Length: 205
Image (cartoon, rainbow, N blue to C red; front, top):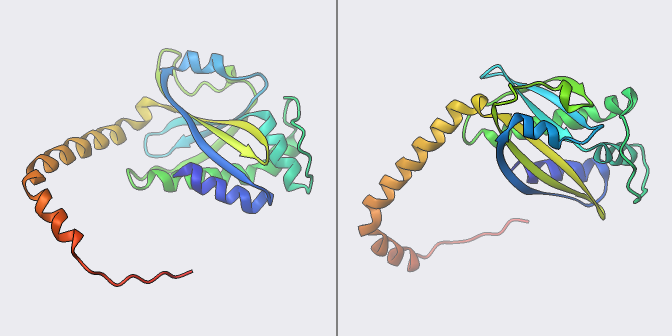
């Protein structure tokens, strides 16, 4: 959901083809995640208001530079080498980051009311420090395609920040299992009735 809504926003802002796809969802130690962060990088540290924990929205420097160039009217298709992002470039991209947090908040809304607030920017993983090194974190990796270029975007959540959410998901999962067992005896009859039901359909463009 986040990938779809954020890519739609980027299409309108960058005036070019943008697609975002989930590449992987991993659970690992925070120390392992920090080791995987490129140097330099673009790390946006955000607070999860409900749990007072922190999370990381990680843009690759190449992605930030591509966004800045497009926002300023450039059309270069050459990938820039990774480098530190200047304060001016950080200011230009800040609005994009804020919108990403809004879309992320909306994506979580079907499961839980989570509010994300941007706290600070870091260029090195060692300075992020959102959790103890032995803490288990959830890392969602996205592949961002802008025109013909591919970039990386990561979300990192400490699992303790999502304790209540995960508990709620487990409750919903087992509740759905119980309901499905009870309704099996009626499913064939319901499907046969649905198959012969006539409904008016109107397509609005």
